[in-house]
Amino acid sequence: MIVLDTNVLSEVTKPSPHSSVLRWLAALNDETSITAVTAAELRAGLSAMPHGHRKTKLSEVVIAQLSEFEQLGSVLPFDHFAAVEYATVLVLRKAEGKPISPQDAMIAAICRSHGAPLATRSVGDFEHTGVEVINPWAQAGTPDTTK
Image 1 (cartoon, rainbow, N blue to C red):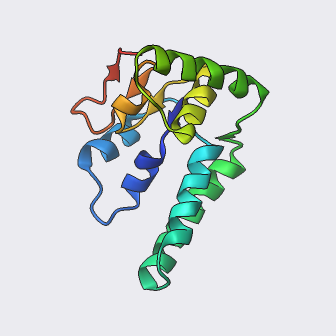
Image 2 (image 1 turned 30 degrees about the vertical axis):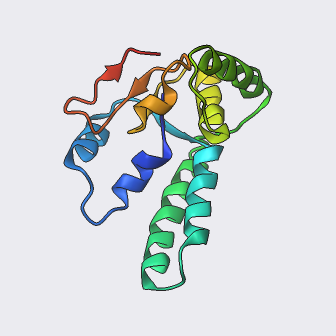
C-alpha cells in the first residue's frame, strides 16, 4: 500500500497535471490509500475557496475522489496506533532540529503505523520521520531513502 499525500490528489485535479505524476499513478501496481488528514485538508481547501464556477467544478472532482477512497475503505484514520507513532515522529524531527506541522506529523504517524510509504512532492517535510517517501514528480518516481 502507498499513501497519497494531499498534493498528489490536488495535482490530478489541475487542468494540466504534471505528466510525471500521471505516469507514476498509471504505473502503480500497489493499492493506494489516503489519510483522514488529507481528506480534511482537501475539504478545508474547498471551503476556503470563493463561491463560483471554479469552486463548484473542483468540488465535484474532489468529492468524487474522496468518495472513491471512502467506498474502498482506503481512508486511514488517526487512531491509537498512529498516536503512538506521532510522538515518535515529533522526537525524530526534534532530534534533527526540524520542526514539523501537526498535519504532516499526523500523516507521517499514520504511515508509520501502517508500515506504508508516502507519495508526496513535499519530500523535505517528511525527512527524518522514519517514513519512506516517494516523489511522483521526480523523473522515475523513485523512493527517497532518507527516512
